[in-house]
Amino acid sequence: MASAASPAQAGAATGAPHSRAAVAKRSARRASPRHAAARTPAAPPASVPPGAGADPELDRLYALVSQYFGLFAEPMRLKIMHAVCDRELSVNEVLAEVGGTQANVSRHLSQMHRAGVLGRRKEGNSVYYRIADENAVLLCRTVCVQLAARMDEARAADGALSDATVERFMTGAA
Image (cartoon, rainbow, N blue to C red):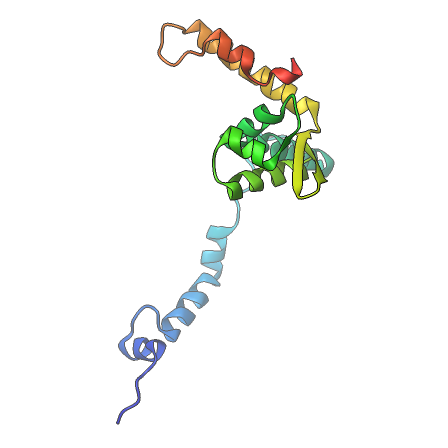
């Protein structure tokens, strides 16, 4: 009785693209200077002044600011901010107010806590969340009012926010 060949052995015998020989050939080709040059990032354009972007401290600050703004790029996190902007809520209360699954809401709460936007305390089996960074609420409210003003200019278009909706948005910081 003949033994069954492994898929790699069968592929090597038939010249299939997943054979060891084919993989080795592709790896050697990728390591060639011609392919390495294609992966090397291009030099900055001549219009960029020398030394621009060469400040590591400033680059780190840009990264931190980007991460901070990234927290607010998720609608569920904005819902959570709105829910807790003027009062402390348990995880179950947040869940009831914003909807979603418990796993998803808990993940967002945890990310916002790690970023310092939310504070939390544990009481018995319950965890309560509150705003720890009032500037985050102020920032979100400012952006909301700005966007609502833009929409107000085009009120004739569908989808404009009512003044009542804007007034309700994260009113704890106003």
